[in-house]
Amino acid sequence: MVKKILIIEDEQQIVEICRDYLQADGFDVVSATNGLQGLEMERSSHPDLIVLDLMLPGMDGMEICRLIRHESPIPIIILTARHSEADRLKGLETGADDYLTKPFSPRELVARVHSVLRRIKLDKMPEKAADTYVQLDRDHFKARLPWGDVSLTPTEFDILATLCSQPGQIFSRSELLNAARGVSFESYERAIDSHIRNLRRKIDHDEENGRHIVTAHGLGYKFVE
Ligand code: CA
Image (cartoon, rainbow, N blue to C red):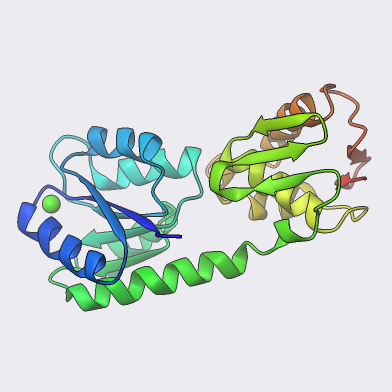
């Protein structure tokens, strides 16, 4: 399947050269010239990876990164003209997966895109294991159940994929938090509980007592067939 890359960058020349190189390498490319448009495109065009410039008119790239990361685990590569180590670290802490300092070679960008996509794929193996009660469709963030499909948020999807990867095994809140890259900013393990309630409502039709998503008191949660 062709991977789609969203470039959020206001300098048209940079957009064009990145687009040329990425398209030549078989990627589908869409672009936005400011943060708000970028956020909208992230939601509407379902890219597989975002290339995000930090210096944008209006909303700062760091803020956009934070907002995107809050709702999606999508891989992000930031472009920065800033040279200090502190800025780079801040970008990575904000949830970016990699960064390139300007000026960069478009070939280097293509190589980073491949490497980040490969890394994310390796990170995300678990959903294969559970093809019995729940089947997971990562492309559409859906869970297929015997009675129909349910739509999940990326965070819910990651939590459920982790639980389903080893039915019967207990996962602690912090393990689930790590698995769900999108919730890292909420930083409290209790945040997992509200995602679990939402998942139970969707999967088990019962927020408090899941038949399939079961509480292991004092330990965490597990998936039961
Ligand atoms: Ca810029």
